Figure 1: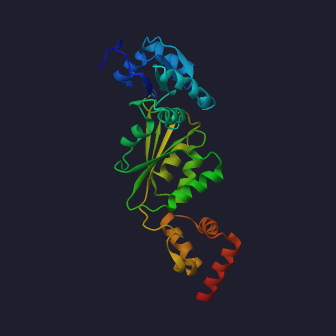
Figure 2 (figure 1 turned 90 degrees about the vertical axis):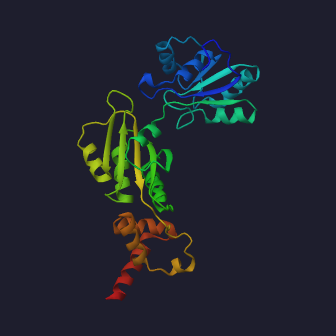
Figure 3 (figure 1 turned 120 degrees about the horizontal axis):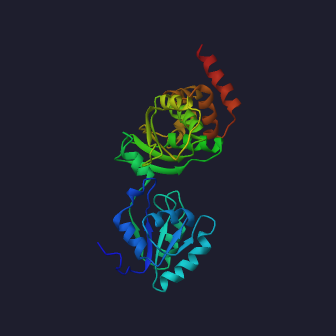
Length: 300
């Protein structure tokens, strides 16, 4: 391992920082922060707390979602001139639901070396302690804030083809977690296995594991939710996607059969199944409801 005085190769060093417990920073990350010429930060005030704790005296510059594209040009010139720049976010790994991805892409395009300095990440930390499948997982960052867009996103995920159960990982704000859990229960069913990881690596770290209905009930009894949240769910295997690859047979399939399948496989009630089917077919829900009633009347 290089000493603190070792000269770093010019380029961009993407440095993961602790997500709560300062003891989680790596020795390599500390060496890099001591060895670079400048540190690009999501928030210089937040990073300065980390630097002060480890007695690191380096100049910092802001590089956040509002100025990353303009700041990139300045940082690129410095690196081309032989400088080593560290990129950090407020917590965790830059570029993962945090600023940094643009600067990394621009650096690569300009031929500037990019060095990943691994460390803390909330999604991976939550996954390995969740009890959910970890051999294949998908990280989606934050779900949409608006209820309708969030619901549509989850419905699209529910319809995706999966040969085996997979863990889906999201970040969520504490004031939205109950609404998101309610949407998960409605789209995937009350028996969906989930894990809610809160305040990872901090003093009040907490995991809630179980069915989405059970976890939602636990959280609903609290006066207030605080802290950063990672939400994980075990998406069930799904060999077919409604309306996909079914050709003419799907076009002539009865509405009652399709609604029944959605209710059985996704745990939806009839109203939600009709709403989703209407979107898939590009028809009105009332039209499908009338057709459903006609099919049922014919069976009598």
